[in-house]
Length: 274
Image (cartoon, rainbow, N blue to C red; front, side, top):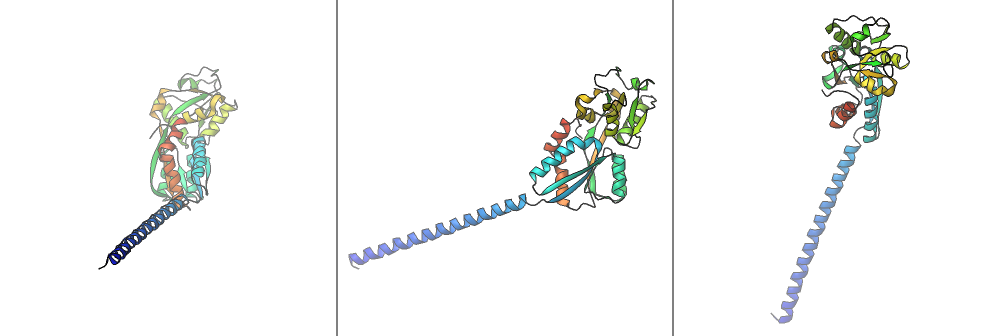
């Protein structure tokens, strides 16, 4: 073979190797691009997954903290909406068993949650997400010098309690029974917010409510702790309902309530950890 022929053969070998390398790089680049595209599509799909409106029936004492969590949920999941119905847990439970459309139920006691589970309207087993303790709400500055649960038996004081069928009322009665105290209120209210409002409007001198409600009222009322409340702490259970229309979205809201982020909002409102 001549020197020129050998040179031409070597040139062809180099050119062929270069072309092969370019083809390999091109394939690798294409593969990476496809992988990146798939990952991006997957992320977009995950972020757009939740949609629809979630209707939450919740105890009145959860109003401030759940409203905050609802707004937070909507910001995190564009395209979703959280609507609330707050009230006495017993009334809410009766509405649910009566066919009222709702996706989530958060009760102020296991007893009222049992109304829903016994009727077969809960999906899965309810879980306790917070606890709440009683406190005496007084007029600002506590002009009547209320210092104990016993002080509320003073006939000159206008005292309000929650109805005995409502969790806050049942807890108050339990504390009174444990202390062997008899108290005749000027009225029994259908939920804890209604009882607190009586004091805020100065229509009552004191009310037995939750710590969270005294906290939420700010300087509109005074707060007096009493040791007997430790014997009447309420567990708050939450559950998905069988009538839920957007199950995944409802489950995601429950997950937020139970998450560290949700617990932070609740404990800052005065709730106790489960």
